[in-house]
Length: 239
Image 1 (spheres, rainbow, N blue to C red):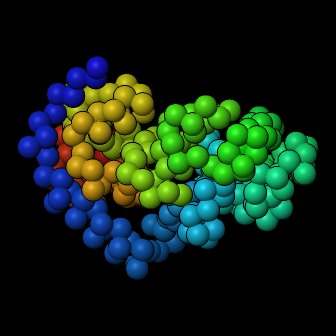
Image 2: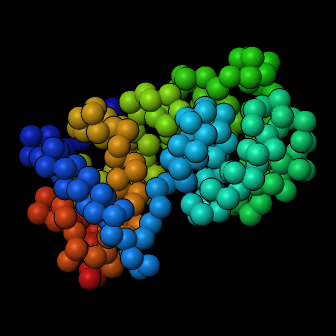
C-alpha cells in the first residue's frame, strides 16, 4: 500500500481551494490574450452534450496525448456523425479515424472506439457503465479516462490525475519530499489526503492553473495564489 508522508492536518485544504476558485473566476472574467485558457476539453464536451456518457467517453479517449483545442474539434466532428455506439459502428474504422484526425494516435483510438462500441452494444445495450472496473475492462481505457467519465458523465466522486494534477500536487508537497512517481500513485495518494468534496473539482482547477501559472518549466511563482502553502519541490527557475 502506498505510504503518504504528508500531514493532512498541515494542508489547509479549504483555504487552498478557495484561493484557486477565486483565481479561476477572476481569470475567466478578465482573461487576456496571453493568459486565456479554456476548460479542459472533456469538461467542455461534457457540458455541450449535457453529460452524455458516450460523448464524455469518446472525448476522453481522443484527449489522450492530444492538445485540448484538437480534442474539442475532433470530438465535436466525430460525435456529430456518431452520437451513440451503433452510429459509430456504422461509420466504420476508416471513417472514424478520419474524423478523429489529427488527435494523437488517431488510428489506434479509432480501432479502440470500434471495439468499445461493440462491447457496449453486446454487454450493456449500448450504455456506458458507471463502474470503474467495467470501464477499465474497455480497450484503451485507463484510470485517468475511467475517473473522468465517472466524474464528468455520472457526477461520481472521482479523482482524475493528468500531468498538471500530478505535477502541482508534488510541487505543493502534499505527499512529502519524496512525492509520487506516476499519476496512478498520485491518485492513490490524493484519495488518502484530499477531502472528498474536492475530488471532482481538482482536475479542472489544476489543469487551468498548470496551463497559466504553475507551468512545467519556469513557473510564474510571482503570480501564485497558493504560494504560501507550496513547498516548491522540484522547482528550479521561476518567474
